[in-house]
Image (tube, rainbow, N blue to C red):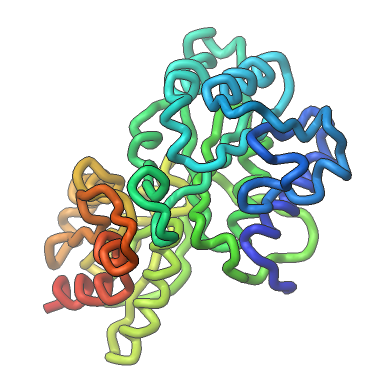
Amino acid sequence: MPEMTYREALNQALREEMERDPTVFLLGEDVGLYGGSFKVTDGLLAEFGSERVIDTPIAEGSIVGMAVGAAMAGLRPVVELMTVNFALLAMDQIVNHAAKIRYMFGGKAKVPMVIRAPGGGGQQLAAQHSQSLEAYFLHCPGLKVVCPAFPVEAKGLLKEAIRDDDPVILLEHEALYGSKGEVPEGKYTTPIGKAKIIREGKDITIVSFSRMAVLGLKAAQELSQEKIETEVIDLRSLNPLDVKTIIASVKKTGRAVVVEEGWKTGGVGGEIVSLIMENGFDYLDAPVKRVSGQDVPMPYAKNLEKLAIPQMDDIITAVKYVLR
């Protein structure tokens, strides 16, 4: 299979869906002439024109609100937020409108829209531009939440999200845009709500998503040199969440470490641990361990930022702790 970057995979997904369906259009700050803040929409303005690739004012509430209205009217908008941190300016439109309208209209109105939102830390963008806000969106029923870790899923999940009749927020980690991976030739989609076992193992399970799934895989490869065979699950979707795959793996290994980049308090990891305890307690041979970001605003200084975000060594330490 050919290799491409995460960024290129997203770009290819957008191009293919815009070619397939004339109701798909893009909107956001600098998505047209500039090609997007992270160059994901590069070249699409020239190919599809300004009616389908729309540069908007700096007004996130208006951008998302316009997309909600367009989706209700039968179009399939794809919003690019310059960063997930700016989604906080559109939470009313996301939580009270996009996520609720289908329910409140008794299913007679659909909101088939996608919000693409770069986020995560590690880029020295400091406290207001380095946040992992997955738990905010996971807490909201009616909103699907996906977090691709590899280029193959970045393409497949975005295509599936565009075709979905419900609103989907696609959370893209900024540190992954330049990462490379194999992507199948031809057109395909990746199902929303289905996790993937990216490494088989028998001793312990690592459950993660987004960039932490990449680090979890690297940690498992290091641990294998010490004869510790670690199973690694890339969740891919947080809502809906593939509980069945998680519990089947825990049943197999008897131990689990849950890894996330976001804050520990009220985080995604706590929800996953609770689900393991509710559905898989009898299979556990040790308590489940969480690895997460520190409960602090993200520092700017590189050395402090590194301390605030889970590193591969933190995952390895947690696995050995559970196995001791």
